[in-house]
Image (tube, rainbow, N blue to C red; front, side, top):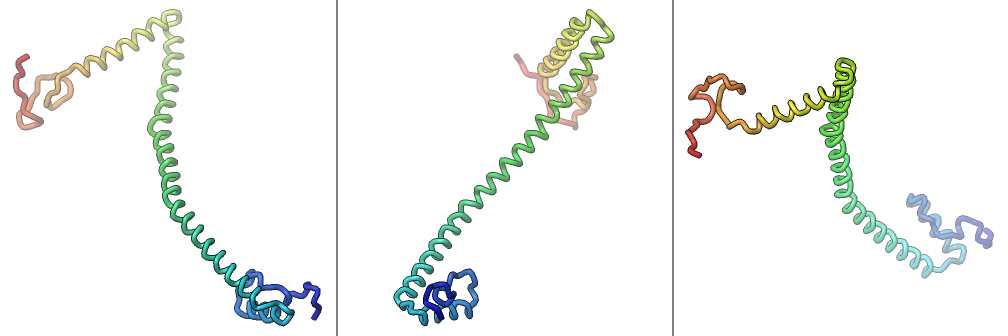
Length: 160
């Protein structure tokens, strides 16, 4: 054997191949090539400490990684929900408004702006009328005078 240090038996085992035969062969080769037992023990103790600290770091990363992954998934779900419930319907409303404006403009010509304002104000008036209606237990949502006593809540005359 040459003592120039190029022989694999002259080096401490690297740990790349954790098979018992490889570690034992490397250790015997290191000691036969003039390596000291102190150096071997020092490498073993250092390797053990490094693996313990590496395991601790991996444990901390796992503990931190679980809530981070859950929060990441929650943020993606929130973004998808907002897109599905707000952004997409707004696209439909926007397209409908553009189409309505185009059709009103083609039918009413120069009076399209006035008709558009009238339609808008009419819609606002309908919403205001709906919000001002008293709550009732009528069978039908339109005021037809049909009030069944066994359907809905009992109403009393409120004195104002």
